[in-house]
Length: 126
Image (tube, rainbow, N blue to C red; front, side):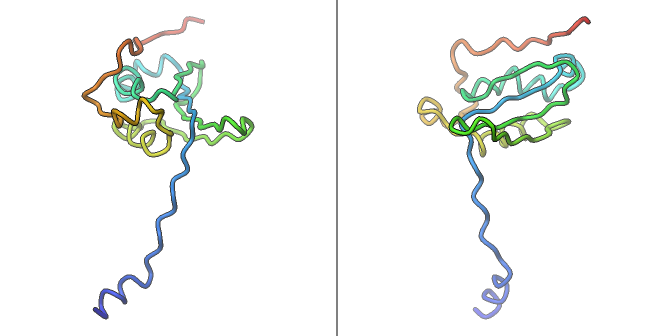
């Protein structure tokens, strides 16, 4: 018993992860040509997040911006360059609030939303 108590002396409670109702995945459309994980996430996994919008911006590094509906001036941004598709999915699962529809499916990857996005590779010609 003493060993367990001694071991736990330095343990700290894990901080609660803040959840957001809205998120944007911002990236340059041409990045998808080079980043298979980003393309896979946008095409196959992003539709599972009703609160997520994909925004293409020329020259932008991949990033996720979280917003609060009641405080639109507060934006939390995370650089997600070179992240694996599964890591993006897990990150958003932990930080994006679920809608009532999403609660029923609990982001089950086997249940693809009907009429989901067509996220084909897009290229910009300037």
